[in-house]
Length: 527
Image: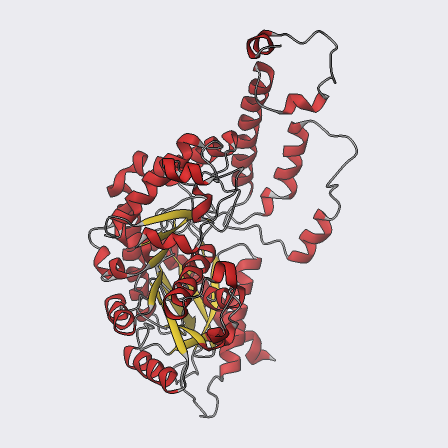
């Protein structure tokens, strides 16, 4: 039988197995497409109904109550129910007790309200369900990701020849940057191909440097790379919570004297707690002087690149060997959506490999974009579509306006905190994170100092008060604040990503903090 015979052959009725009833739950024919449209409508209604159910960022249900209730749900029933019934259960039992990231009083984490254009893109990419590992699985998607990556490289003033790939977020991007840094160093210093031969004996002396305010993924990456967390040298920060350059120089001198081998500096453009940005140009100078790889974790602060008024904060980032940037933070995309950018795209050679069924060498020779060669993942979503749709719907100026607004809002609420005697600002904001604490009336010393005067509040008392304030506001669903420690003492944090949050909203949050603090003080005094 010829190919044309096969193409025109119709299967006789009853020939082969009969599709299962569940096949109606898939796209691909008029019935499935109609069912999909109805399901999307119902899911949308379910989501919006859940938003209307709770007034505030969270219903306040505690974890024990949630566990007891959700434990009653059947996960894999023998037979299914109607989708409408299932979604009703999801709305009542799960969405009702979800954090509402769009609420102006949700100011805890680097967890943004996604734009509506990005949500529309999410629908498209999940419906097509393409994987970005090979061109034949995602043709237009592979080419578009390359275009979006090129635009990102331009945004950070990278030169021609730069490259990159979309990732799940900063953790993956930071690991990828340090993996390439390690392998580059071992190849150039020891003529060792780590991909094939493994780590050289000298690997025990490898060290990477970052500030003591850097993200924990520097330690995590060192572990995953077989170097161990002891390979991470933390450098103190200055009064602005930026890496201290004098301390960095001392650390590099000490490593040299001890016979250690630093291979990378990790700079941070937007620390998690303070949003502080390390002196990137100076770090680039140090990296060049010592022939080290400079990786910049710009997962948070990278969004400054889209703003004419903020991009100067990133001066020097164009000299970094690699950059991590998250779109699911200040670029307002649904989780997860990040990118890893590489200044010299040729250095991807330390990572690439070929598999006959995915990216054969003949495809490489023909220039076919099989992006699996750039990523530690194989199956990977078409997340580049989300910022593409958002940028085209809002324009660069529209996204920049949102980033600039929340940074201005941080400055405004910092001024409110400075003016309130019951509150202490822990550091002036660099981006949109504001760290502060409640200070009782009898606490004369600043939190980083000791105060042994009779009747003055101790550090344990400060810790109990600030943790109690945060826990009570969360339990009541009134506001969601972040918690952290500054100089060993508990502190609170406003993480401002929502362009719909106003100063009036934040003034109400600060008033609630003071009210709760005074009430907790009164309870303590009465006991």
